[in-house]
Length: 143
Image (cartoon, rainbow, N blue to C red; front, top):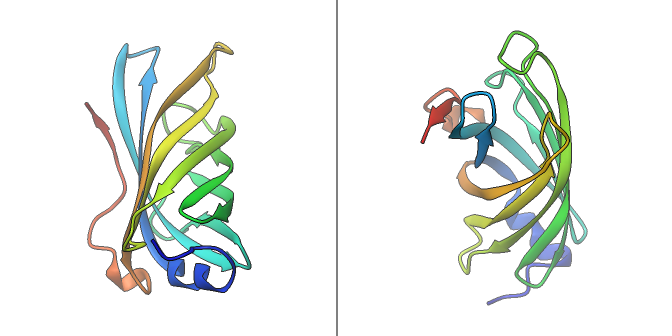
């Protein structure tokens, strides 16, 4: 594995699909949330921000990259018109960078609306250089 830190984080620049699963206490089921995000490499950091044209909620994350591991924090402001009515959630995550640097996969941790700690899988997959690479709208899917 090539070292993914410092200047080689530039290979992460572009549009990515973010998929994470969480357990909805109200629905008592696992849901998949999907966002399209833009990654901005800066030194050994990755800044991840929702693409506003295609997401109804807003997500921002910042990761430090050390070899093939990205560790950081995230925040999501949910869709004001959606089920969670603009609630702000935040937490931490740790992701393993694939050898080809076209995906990152790991776990997120954060709190739920009843102040319980939750965790689940989180994966980023490279889509392309710009928003024209996006072929579908983000969605929440029942697992």
